[in-house]
Length: 171
Image (cartoon, rainbow, N blue to C red; front, side):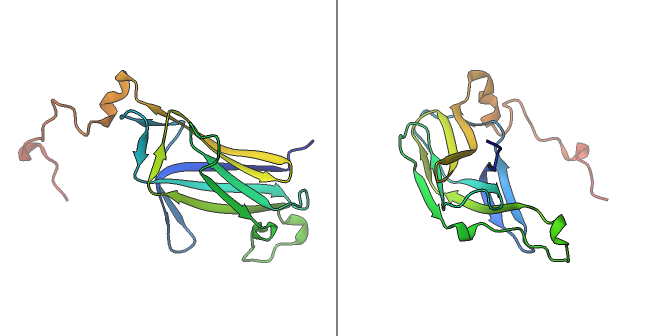
């Protein structure tokens, strides 16, 4: 069966909706979220920018977004989305129909504050449409290894502020 649905999730410390149709993501995680404390941990805030795409007219059921934390059998977040919430991206200019995208999409900014993570493992994001499950993101959460512990220090223990004579001046 050809791929008719896909998506992605960007995990970050914070997400802000800005003016002029912009979004700012702060503290974007890459492969994993490395924490210094033992589990369970409580994160003050975790934001997920969820994007889901599907081919127009390929599916017809409503959507169900589920997000899991490691150590839990059931999703800790669940949202049902009507098919009407999927949109064909609007064009603010004239584009011939033959050149328009055949994609529909939905973007969901999701923020959890606080978020308790019971154990190491993956935070997972999935979208369900009828019998089709589309995995649209995961982030490994793990405790820092001993060689990574230094990244949690703001300054190395031998750091010192340079004397004013060595500080650059503003021009």
